[in-house]
Image 1 (cartoon, rainbow, N blue to C red):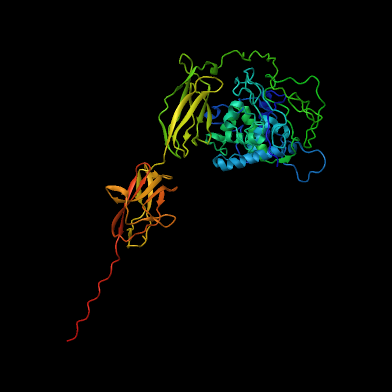
Image 2: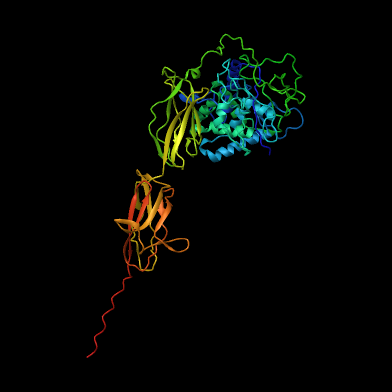
Length: 582
C-alpha cells in the first residue's frame, strides 16, 4: 500500500460563531446516540482547569474546517446498489493512503507508548478538521501532498502572531510562520515533533505518514492517557486551544468510531467551511467554477470552489504561499506593529532550579525552571520557552521527547517536563530558548550516574562447602537494594580474595571457570537483573583445603563477603574388632 504524506489547505464560508451554533444544534440532536455508546461527549465534558494551558499548540491555533459530520449513520449498507450514496457513507470514506497512515501511526504508538491508548480515529478526526484528510487524499504514491497545504501567515492580523522560526524552510515564508501539511504543524513545533515514519531519511510535514505519526506523538506526550476524557480534552486543546475546536474534533471522533471505510486517493469529500471566514480569509472568486459532484458517490453538489479548494475538471489551481496583503477592516484587529510579549523578552534567567542528578534509568526528581525577563528584569508571561536536550545522550523528557515547549506563567516562569535518565551516564545539557525571539539561550546541566546499590544480601543461608577437587553444590545468589528499593541493572564484580584485609585475587582455593574451562578468580561485567538479583556461576575447588572468602562489590559501594569451606569428606570410625578368643 502506498505511503502518504501531505500539506494543508483552508476553505469554507462559515464563521466560528456560526460553527459554534451548529455544534450546539448537533449536540442536541445527536446526544442520545452518543450517550448510547457510553462515552462522554466534548459538549458535556468539562476539561480540568489546566486543560487550556498550552505548551505551544501544534497548529499555532491556526484556522480549521468547521463542517460537522452528518446526522445519519456513517456505515454504508452492504446491500447498497447503484445509485446515490448516502451522505453519511460518503463523509465516512477516508482516502486509502491517508487511512493507512493513521492506522500505522496507531500501531507504532501502541508499541512505543502503550499507556497513551491512541485511537487512529482521533488522528482521522483531526486530519478531517485540519485539512479535509489531505484535501480528499490528493497525495502521491509516497504519501506526500500533490500541492502544498498551507495555513495563513500568523502575522497577528486575525490570527496569532508567530514570527518566522524556520527561515521559510517548511512554509516558504521568511517573515511569519504558517501551518504546514495535512496535520497543520507550525514549523517551530515540527522542529521537535517531526517524525520519519516511512523510513526515507526525512521528517516531512507534507507527508501524511510522517505527519500522522508526529501528531500521534504530540497527542501522547505528557504521559496522557487518551482513554481518559480529561487527558483526551487536554491533548486536543493542546493541538488547537479552542473550545469550539475541541467540540468539533470530538464530534468527528465519535462519528468515525461508529464506522468508516476506504475510498480511492483523491476522491474524498472536501469540507466547505472554515473557522477564519470573516477574519482575513481569502474572498471567494468573482467568477465561480461550475459546481462539481463530490467524489465517492455523494449526490450533493460541491459548492463553488474557493481559491484554496481544488477546481473542477481535474486541475487544481496553484495555491498562494502567502495570504492576500489587504488587511481585514475589523476595528478589533490588532495592529501588526504592536509589541507582543515575545518582543519584550531581553534575557532568560534560572528560576531556582535545584541540582539535577539521577541514576541511569530513573526519573529526575527535580525539574528545570526558567524565567523570561525584560531588560529591566520584569517577568514576561505568555512566552513560549523551548527546552532542548542536546548532545549524544539517551536521556529524554517524560514521554520520550527530546524537545518540549512550555508557555511562561503569570510570573514569567516556564517549568520543563520531568527528565527521564537513559542508560548513558555523564552530564547532559538542556538548553532553554525563546520561541520566535533571538536571545541568548540558557544551559542547564543534568548528571546521569551509574545505577547503584547500597546493600547486598544473600538470598539463602545454606553452607557453601566442597571437598578438594570437587564442585560446590550451592550457587551464590545475592540481592541488591538501594534505599530499600530493588536495585536493578547495577554493575557488580565478584572476587575470591586472599583475606579480609587483602582484597586481591587469591591464587589458590575455590575458583570459577571461563568459557574454556580454565580457572578464574575474578568476574567483572556482572549486572543485577530486574529483581535486583545476581546469581554467580558455579564454584569449584582445587586440592587446597581451608576457609576462603568471596567478595561481591557493586557500583554505589555495597559489599558482601561470603565464606567458603573446602574440607575432606568425613570418614566414619571403624567399629572395634572382636577380642580374640582365649
